[in-house]
Image (cartoon, rainbow, N blue to C red; front, side):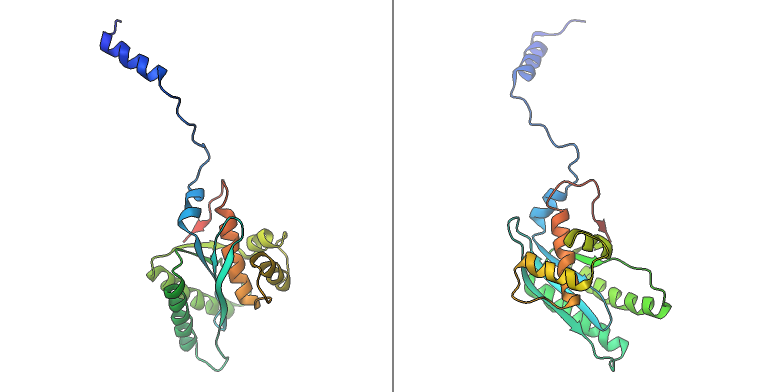
Amino acid sequence: MGISLQQFKQMKERLGGSPRAAAPVLETGLRRALNTHQIILGVDPSLRGTGYGVVHSVKSSPRALTHGDIACPPAWSHSRCLVRIAQTLRDVIRRHHPTVCVIEGLFYAQNLQTALTMGEARGAALAVIAEAGLEIYELAPRKVKQAIVGHGGAQKIAVAKMVQRLLNLAEVPGPDAADALALALTHAQATSRYSLHAPKRI
């Protein structure tokens, strides 16, 4: 089968052109996400003590923009606590403009009432975060401890001290705030390199 002179010239140009750069086969978009999501909100939901932390993800040294606990006294009704959680998180988002949120994944509670109460706090937080248009991911507590301390059974104080060290904080953060900052740090680590296992988005 013959080819025309024009077809021959086109084939010659294609063969003689500059070689194309190879693209990574395993790229999942996570590296692009690192550039897009530089301010990460971590949330550790609880009715009486929701922890939050905002981390500015920088390759060399991530830093905490803010962190704290949303404390609700035992005398407060559930509804009042949920309003407090929603209002505080809405204010944090307004001040620091995160583009992605990482929330602690669900765990299996032996007490049904505890599970329902945790679900209420988690739902209040998720509603506010979704309302702001943030992408939301969840991480299991054991995965966070493994990433920050090195083993999934680490105690809370070990997580808090390692978070203090990684973020160069003047003081050890409270346990709930430390867990929230650890969530944000773990997400930053996961999106700073290629991974076959993308974080679970919700």
